[in-house]
Amino acid sequence: MSHVVHDNKKLLARVRRLRGQVEALERALAADPDCFATLTQISAIRGAAQGLMLEILDGHLREHIGAEKNAARRTEEIAAVRGLLRSHFK
Picture (cartoon, rainbow, N blue to C red):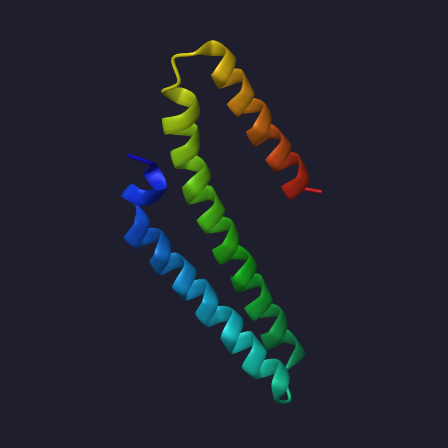
């Protein structure tokens, strides 16, 4: 069973929290927002998105790389994660 399916409830809760933060930012921007409060909301959204990514990445590393018996497949998975991380941190 995939770690994403296994942790489905926890991951969906994170996504819902993230959606709530984005909706709050949208409401704030539609009004007369305080700059610092807006920056704080954006920072919280970024943190929530990164937390979600790290949660899924952690499971992927454990289940799809660490537990992979086939060395060639493991190398492919590592290359894919490295590419993802390189584009993420650009």
